Amino acid sequence: MAQSISREAALRVALAARELGSLPVRKLVSALVERLELPLTEAKLATVTVADLQLLLQGDDVVESEVPREQLKQAVRLLWGEGIANHDLPPVAHYADGDMPGSIRVACASNREQLLDGHFGSCERFLVYQVSPVEVRLIDVRPTLAADHAEDRNVARAALIHDCQIVYVQSIGGPATAKVVRAGIHPVKVANRGDSGGEALQALAQLQQALHHPPPWLARIMGVEAGSLAPFAAALAAGEA
Image (cartoon, rainbow, N blue to C red):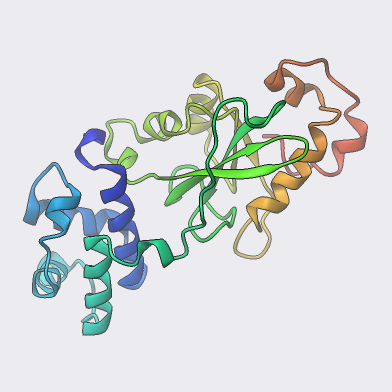
């Protein structure tokens, strides 16, 4: 079922759900699928009207209270694909193989902007960065909604970031950790900072420094000889899962 929702459609639905007051994405998806049927495509989302959305939300108690009409209008615009570029989505830079020698690819579980504030099994998207000793570049933003409709969503989420060597998360359960590791990805937990793990770029700056003299776990990922772990133990104390 993961192929029943395109990446672009998943992004539109996730942003619309947030616009409606942190409505659980799955509830909105279920309501839309009941109305539009699978596959849930951009073309189908573009047919949704304010009246349609109002009826969908009222049916089966999807929302507990009436949503202001202005919020409904904005949610519909997002379903149509309007205004997404300005809706807290960080700009993505071009990357081609070989652009950044000595780099690795890192995914960060995120819900807002470039915050590292997501749990592996429930984050709205993965921010994908290419990290070298001299540069950190955001190269992709991957919504997770489509993966959540797979038979095994943890396997599908791992497949979504299959080209990454590391994934940074606020938390990850044991079964999910096993599936991520099996996919060849190293999970790294970050310490909570208030309600989030802080800026993704802060965590990646620490990783970037470690690339110069990698500790054993990072050296294995990079395929190089390990340096001393001591200089980086404090910086990565909250890091290695």
